[in-house]
Picture (cartoon, rainbow, N blue to C red):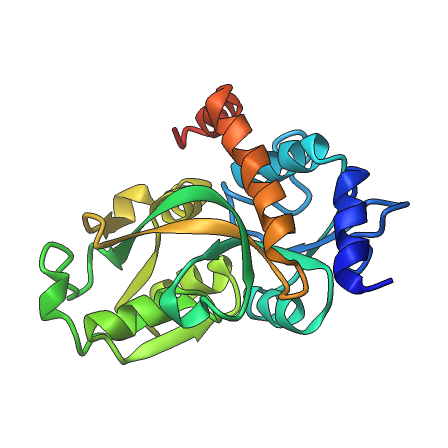
Length: 245
């Protein structure tokens, strides 16, 4: 039987293609990184807004997610080299368009600069700071955004904690990241008074994305489930729980 015929039969039975999601176990391999307040490793009953969105999405699709945490660059590598693997939250950018199957939009991101109040970075006029040393998360979409904006003196960090350390140790003049991730990092260190942030300079959408063996029909299943979550207020309720709505 041809693969397309098998796929159509799987859909008729309400199952995902056997080549992507095992029809018997319905397990879904998920890779991500510790990105509070969006995704938290060992978060207990507050695992992060997007983690909870993913759990609800999988529940509606009758999937059993197996979530693993890695450094962000490693997570992306796994999602592009392993089969039947999804990653979140992945910023959808033109440079990434053909590297992943885009399964469902999850969150509207707003990116801004963070700098020590005692430093020389002009937070109100970041466009004048093109030669400054900017720290960002290794492998994240921020580097592509910064390069597009004309910043090329980038210092990549392996984690959010390292981004913050680079600022404290004077290894970077400013950091660039998602608004709520930066705010969460400052609050966790009781450091809001020591830093200043710029207005958002770029807005994008974070997605649940998959390896390329997910086909269009499967992606449409994910997107229909997410549309239903948005329509009945579930997405808004989860985001509001974390102050993201």
